[in-house]
Length: 293
Image (cartoon, rainbow, N blue to C red; front, side):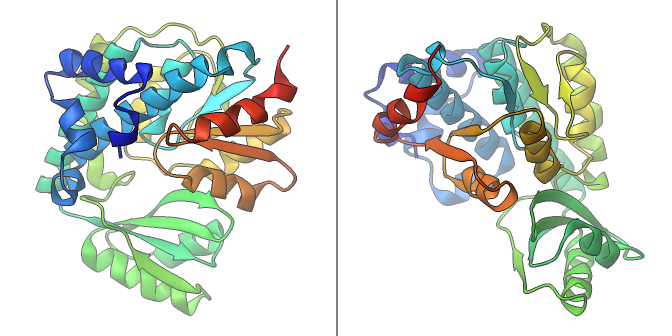
């Protein structure tokens, strides 16, 4: 997923992140195979790195001249959001991401789990499906009719059947390496907390809407990032919070277009764009033109 960017000036951040983490980030973005990237210690660092490449490329293509009202990031993306809000430098954030990935990998190895997307059922009904089931919890409320559950393989399977009985159209297993954003990540939280204690955060220059409470913040990020590991990602509510604050244009930066799709499903009448490859930069300039000061 990184190959299209190797000739762009923004690719320089990849070497910077490699130096900061002691990992070959360029290899993860251009040469690693699917099996390697399935490991969360690799997937997180790769996705974070590419999101920063797209952030810096977008800034050099006009984003720096547009007033940004607020930022948010889905799960791992919250670290990119904090870099974008000047709350933490990129290299320091990369070290936290690397430690987060290692911690979650270790926790997943010690308490194996999985995740599944429940389609066609709202968050309250999914929570109902998980009630009383040992080893199953709602993990991501992404958009109307798209909620992810996490837990043990047996717990997720049982909750999936309960969700179908409550009217879910489909329950789809996700190719992930653990039960993220659930109590099975408690060991990872303890390890990440030690790294967060050493990190230095600045007050954010714009509001950062956090995963754990879908509310805007300018400080307190160490606590928010710690709680995020074992708490559901309240993404649908985060989008609604942004919209209620007056946000009308949403820009997704990083691999894929999943988040733009969630905006479309959650909030009608908004303008959306994404930057995943260099080809998207031309579209970005047209998207940003009406927003310039």
